[in-house]
Length: 194
Image (cartoon, rainbow, N blue to C red; front, side):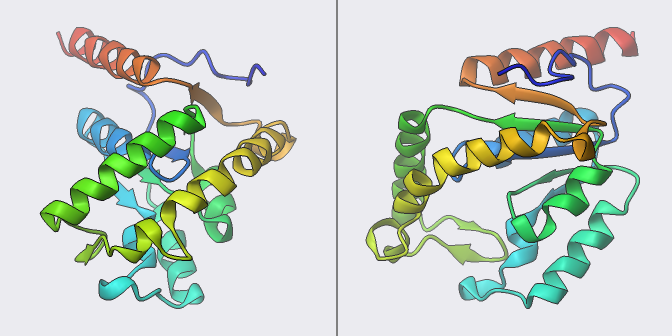
């Protein structure tokens, strides 16, 4: 499916970028790289949603924090929370959708989660990956599998509406596309700086 605006190639004049995609797709890594390259503040919605020990922030508090961050003039925000989607998407100029095949997402998620378990990596407000998030009843892997298709269909529906017609949408379907896009923007950035 072709998405309007998907031919956007240069981010130099863009000040608000939303990055979305399935859990484990690499959206946060891509968003951090984009924010560094464009010298924009980076906002990770998971860090606004969770306190240490995976305690969720109250919904109103989370909502208010997203409103405050999305109200800024510049940012790269990554995350997929339905509660706050409209706030971010309405303010964004560009939406980058990391939409890799499910097999790639599951493999990356397994690899990332295993690495976090082994190293004790700290992320999202001091949280660590607990073993139950890999194999328990609320497994992040099962969530990735169950949500992949429905999220893809929902994003396609939403992006076909006039409400989000202002967005320049870039749908990245492989790591190669994501890398090429970053390289292209790095090259463009260096050319305009010269």
